[in-house]
Length: 175
Ligand SMILES: Cc1cc2nc3c(=O)[nH]c(=O)nc-3n(C[C@H](O)[C@H](O)[C@H](O)COP(=O)(O)O)c2cc1C
Image (cartoon, rainbow, N blue to C red; front, side, top):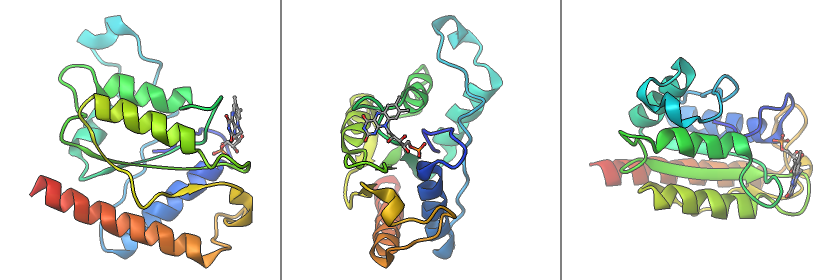
C-alpha cells in the first residue's frame, strides 16, 4: 500500500516496482488502495466501516505487508499513520505480521525519518518490521522514470534483494 494518494506519486511507482519484483518470483502481489479508507474515529470500533474492515483483513491475510510512503513534515504522512491506527484496534492485526517500509522523495531525505517513525510505531504494536536492505531513495527522479521504469539498474537490483529477503523472512517467521 502507498501512503501517497497523489496521481503520479513516486511512492506509487516504487510500490508497483516492488509488486513486479514479487510477481517475478512467482508470488502474488495485491495492491491495497488507501484512498477510500476514512480517518480513524474511536466510536467506529464496534462497527468498522467497510474500507477499514477491508484494510484490516488485507493486513491479516497477507504473508507480508509492504508500505511505501514519502516523508511529510519529517515524519509519516497521515494517510499511512491512519493504517496503523485502524490495524491496532482490537482484535489487533499487527502482532505476528511481517512489515517492510520503503520510501522515496525527490529531495534529499529519501524518507528516512518516515521509515524510522513508522517502524517504531509498528514495532510498538508488536509488528515484525524488516529493516534491511533499506530502499529509501533520495532524488528518486534520477533513478526512476516518470513512466515508472527503472533508470538506475542498481535500484532494481536493490528492490529485488529486498523482496526476496522479505519473502524469506516471512516464511521463516511464520513457519
Ligand atoms: C505536506 C508536505 C510535507 C512534506 N514534507 C517533506 C519532508 O519533510 N521531507 C521531504 O523530503 N519531502 C517532503 N515533502 C515533499 C515530498 O517528499 C514530495 O512531494 C514527494 O514527491 C511526495 O511523494 P509522492 O511523489 O509519492 O506523492 C513534503 C510534501 C508535502 C506535500
